[in-house]
Structures are given as C-alpha cells and as structure tokens.
Image 1 (cartoon, rainbow, N blue to C red):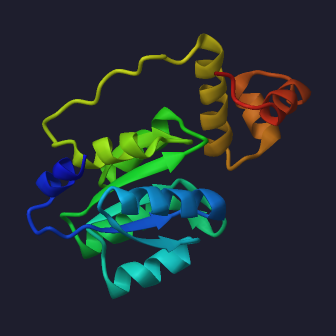
Image 2 (cartoon, rainbow, N blue to C red; image 1 turned 90 degrees about the vertical axis):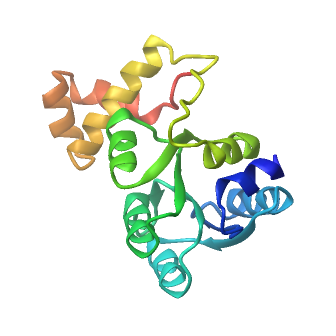
Length: 185
C-alpha cells in the first residue's frame, strides 16, 4: 500500500491532516495512517483545522463532515483554496447523497461512511481521478435509503422537526421516533 502512496503524489509530500472531533477515533486513525507512510497532524474543529491549513496546507486530508463548531465542507474548501493539488476525503456517520455531491463539488475526491477502514481510506486517497470506485459489496437496504432521505430533508430544514415532518407528509412524533433510532444497515 505504501507504493500506492508514492504514486499518488510526485512531490513525495505525505502530510496528512485528520479533522475529527471524536478524539479516540482521530488518534486511532492517525496511528494507522502513520503506519501506512503518512505524516499525520490532527485537528478537532473547523477553527483548529483552519489555523493548521494556514500554517501548512497538507497534501492529503481526511475530514469528518460534522464538527462541533461547523461543517467539514468548510475545511475542504479552505484546503483547496490554499493547496489546489491536495487530495481530501470526507468521512461521516451521517452520509447522504446531497452532502456527498457537495463535498465532491468543493474538491473532495471521495466520501466514505464511518467507520472507514484505514486501507479503504488509503485506497481512496491513492485512486487516480480517471479510476472509478468499486461498487459496494453490500448496497444500502430500502430501509437505509429511506432513512438517508429523511436525514437529508432534516438537514435541509436546518434540523427543524416540525418543518421536516411537514415536507415529508409525516406525523411529527413518527419522525421523532425515526430520528431517535440508529441508522438501519
């Protein structure tokens, strides 16, 4: 896998910024990426990431979508402004199609669901732009697609339960029960 890292970036720059507010996950991922040849630096927030990007924009980035002080897409945008050749991926436990499209439009090269395997992350970072990602072995179930749609509408409504229920033509309490449950597999 280290050979694919070398092929990724001709400048041999292996700097990697990991932006995630889940500290245990962040530290495990940093150790795993270091073992795979990267030079990781971590940030817990959009503000912390912005300071590190200003100081030294990384060649690679792994950015969580939801951070305590904002949106990971802001971090992607800042990285691309400072270093257009950087390769960034978005990780999220709250994935949906709309945010995946937005992430790619802002310059992310891939969008992976948490918890992502470090080898999958390296493969995403190493993938050439003309290469297509492999289709998932386990596609989403119909329940998961429905849950994703509800989450997308909920986000579009700024997390307003009443407005989301109105737009989905659903009873508010039914929506609250759905939102309280974990995502189906």
